[in-house]
Image (cartoon, rainbow, N blue to C red):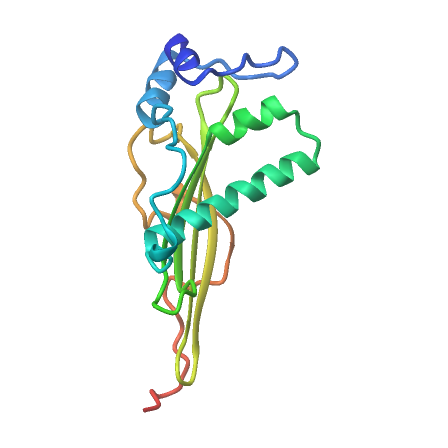
Length: 187
């Protein structure tokens, strides 16, 4: 516990909270799962010439998300020091498909928000979005889900991606097995 508190500069849990007792095994799982803090490099390797590079577009997407998070925290009068701790404990990993014309086609976004308090858990969010126009139809799907990490039932073991019990779906319009449309393919 002390190693995790020191490594991630965790705040003490307020006395008014009824936090459950957490054993050393949970803290060991937490330290194995949570990455060590890293200092982000200033600036970007992306220049104006690289505007079409998917890594640069993903970085721009991440920057826009962080900017909106800061704005929401500020608009809701969250203490600036606490806001900084929250943003430091947030990781965002975008992986988009940006065709040559620069519009987002598919996005797999994973984000983890770790507790800034001495509570050995974080919440992992997963978002999938796909949009593609076809000649006579449009492919579209969106799903947002979350899970507690490390999962008390799994420890540090990663859940099976197809195990729907590991994730709680917030909203979705995707089918695991899409129903037949009844329409024949039109050439």
